[in-house]
Length: 181
Image (cartoon, rainbow, N blue to C red; front, side):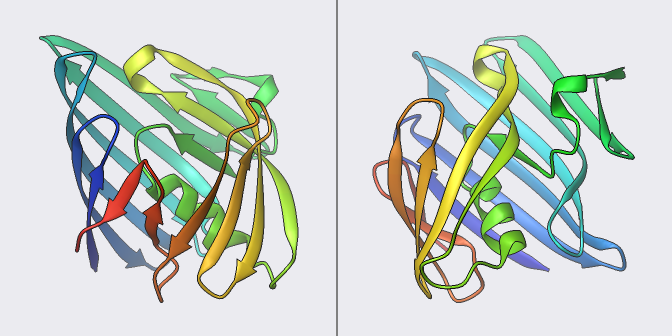
């Protein structure tokens, strides 16, 4: 088991994440506590991946100012069931991107296994649980060095250089997240 602690800079958050290696891949469990628009929130998520870090299922719950929200997804062949319904626009997607955690950047960084100067554009299920948004998203990852990736959000022109640790976990996501322990 690997345990991580990230500090979120924008939402003044703390995330405690546990990653367990299991026979079929990885089980990830995390809790995030933070502040969004002057409201305190708690987000818990569970993600199961295969041994290539491709997401197989996930569950995300949020409590903010007494209101609870939940989203869950399960890979079914090439389709995704989101809250029990097939969502055709997510067909063949391998990754999810939860907007308030750097962990979901780690999944494609580890899964794509890029070589230095190699890039790949991927489709992800973008989930912003705090703002009730789920949609398809395109991202581009370029491996700049052993410990640095260039991340591009193809939908908004946002880009950043992400530093990873020796295990491939996001260490520094400038202006957004820092690995504390």
